[in-house]
Every structure is written in structure tokens, then in C-alpha cells.
Image 1 (cartoon, rainbow, N blue to C red):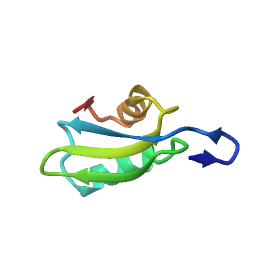
Image 2: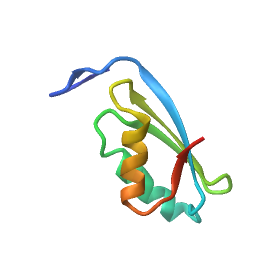
Image 3: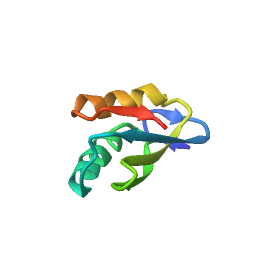
Length: 80
């Protein structure tokens, strides 16, 4: 994957997270907006019932980076 200004970031990895305080679609929308602000993060899929979400990101983006952004907006997120 080649992102302007960042170059080739490598193959995409899939990350899955859970957050006990995901209660509605609005929560998922906030999380989606936050994680897609990280260059290269894409393909957000959220599930309110499972209180989880999945994203794809280049190998240059770590699981802890994604989790950190979600924690900054108030969600108790953990890798699933």
C-alpha cells in the first residue's frame, strides 16, 4: 500500500478490538472517525451487539496505535 507522503507501508493486517462501552451506532461512528484518521487505516466494520470492531491497517501501524486513539476518545478498548 502506498500512501502519499508516507510511501509504501507494506501489506495490510486485520485488527479486531472489543470495547465494553460500545452501546450504539453513534459510538461506533465516533470510533470509526478516530481510527480512520490514522493514515492507512481502512475497512472499518463495527458490531454493536458484540461490542467490537475490525479494521485493516498497514504493518507500519501498530495495534497499540489504533487502541491508543480509541482510548483517547473515551472507550475501554482491548485487542480481541
